[in-house]
Image (cartoon, rainbow, N blue to C red; front, side, top):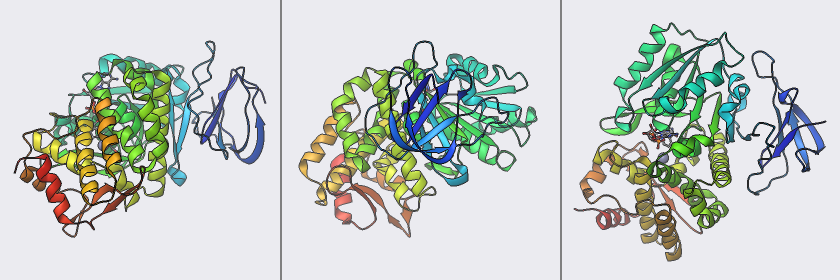
Length: 449
Ligand SMILES: NC(=O)c1ccc[n+]([C@@H]2O[C@H](COP(=O)([O-])OP(=O)(O)OC[C@H]3O[C@@H](n4cnc5c(N)ncnc54)[C@H](O)[C@@H]3O)[C@@H](O)[C@H]2O)c1
Ligand SMILES: [Zn+2]
């Protein structure tokens, strides 16, 4: 089998051939050797053949490798061939979907087009992202596919607009454009756009197809994956929403080149989270590579996004609707949401609030005797190196924390359950079984009474 380029990582191998583009195959065990791109690879792999595109113009070859490897990214594109995406699969039975990760993926229309259903597309974006990437996205949706009609709705930018009024603008556009059940909504932007567009897709005509094109670190490592969609209420974040999975997530890491430094750092809070709750080796990698991430080193970013998405995909496939395990992805978020809501949406970035919240959760875990001193210090150090806050804003009071935490989604039967670290690095618990005094002491240590 000849291929112009090949790629393999923990879950996936992808081949690209000049004649057929990407090809997808299924259901047999093969021993493979790829003499492509000046390198070879052999491994025992499970192959799957599916043609999930609409028009059979192209196919994707995706190997589920039985061998696992934690080696950093091996993007082997040559200058003459398109960048080969890293693929992480979110395994949810017949709602499974791929996450494509790589530099320049918006220049590869076939990746996106195979997931577009019907002939009508609505791109949902905002006033900041539209001038940067809307034309390119429309090109990627329509190149060689002139029958597709693309509409766009450009929303105001900001967490404070993640609300019902702004959501209504998406429905206005969809209804005015007479989009039918076979249309596809495309979220182009950060987590705010992804959450709103996803919720709009979940409810428009009781559910239409949906694609995520995340353009912030936050969205690329976290919010675009796993199907949580929704909007804020005045009294609390993300209180109105739905679980609704996309058809695919397309991550073009080149979009990070225009992201402000503060937004970049905000997304790193979620990357750090994965290391702390379940992936000690990844945390250690971050301790060594934080500088490369802040310098926007492309291969470091592809690796960090891939590893983050693998962690999230694994958790989501085990617990899609958050009956337990998935809640652990909210380390630092209960305290963090209180900061975001208490200060007013948009004052502190989500990741900044999560960083301060993580320090509070770690402090409480330490007070309970569940983690040792050295881990507390490592958490402070990595957050500082990522240029993230390690304490909430001074205006926060104990009462502000308590009143927002009382309506947290993790309150069950009146008891607030928290994600706390317990044991060595990489271990956490989701529990309501803790000494209330430790929570009170943490709140008092970090805010005014
Ligand atoms: N659904 C989930 O599972 C989940 C997980 C984590 C966070 N979230 C949500 O995500 C939101 C935060 O997402 P965010 O941090 O991406 O914020 P955001 O969507 O507000 O984007 C941050 C800023 O960057 C701008 N921007 C986006 N892409 C850009 C680019 N490539 N170049 C220049 N500017 C760009 C945006 O316009 C905005 O001003 C919160 O609402 C949070 O609740 C959801
Ligand atoms: Zn988050």
